[in-house]
Picture 1 (cartoon, rainbow, N blue to C red):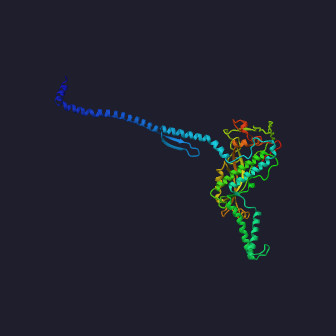
Picture 2: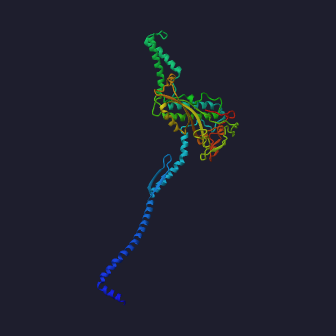
Picture 3: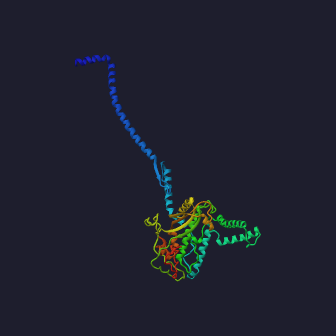
Length: 450
């Protein structure tokens, strides 16, 4: 054994415990550092993986949901995902889908609401052709009378009636107050008293009508026929009926604008001056043959005058050179322009505009506003109240769905519009219940208006 080794062992033996403790003191920090570093790295890696898994679980717990609501802004929120939420979400989306599918039906009912047909054109006896013009004239006159009564639309009393009432008042006043004969000469004071009395009588007659009416209107200024036709012309009948529907819609808008008033004196809309639609039926290049006769004595419709009505077909491309809407007639709907004029309180014109916009697909595509001389109007019996008024002339665009108007159209109207009046997929006999209205002796090939 090496002497130095033997000497070292001899020195360590007495102090073995102290030597071991010293060795441990020297080696533990080094080994502890090495093991601590490895453990920390392992722990950090495990913690990172655990955090990643927890984040994934949290993402599964909630999710961001966006739901498109018709007519409203999209609803977006972060929600807890569970079976109840999934069931509710499924029910809501199903309801929305069903609502979207029901839009055509709602639009159809909205468009035809309150518009009844005055003609049953499906079948008629040829022998009735002579009586049809008179019957239709009676029916449409009655329809206008009912519309004016229900709307509270009135005209000032005729000037002749007012004059007669003033003359009666004059005779009674002269005899009762002055004790003189009707032709007696009156002094200056008596003339002044009589003049004031007669003015009050005349104004009183006009005020009576103003208090009772919702707005002023004359049926002949808005389209009521003045006389019956000499012979049956179903294209004219149809356009006259179509204009009646238009007047019904415009009166409905006026009543909506005047909803919080009972007298024309307080109403925003004072008067409907006129309603004149543009030509409803375009000119045809050739005469339409009369309907066939099946031997029963009843006219039979031709049915197929053009393409059938197809609510699902795309409409024509918009043409903004025609109007601000760019719409034009197609197999889904007909576009009808009309000119209408109103007397409206100047500061309340928006009430009429808003009411028209809510009424049966009406769009205002043109507007002219001019001041009104209320004193001149009062001399003619139209009392507008104390507020400043304006004459508002509008060009309005209306839309009429062929799904309900088509079956009512006479054959020549269908031919002019290029439609069969039948809905795609529907049997022609069932869909063409408005056909067979032509008469061999009826010249209905020219464009007609209401």
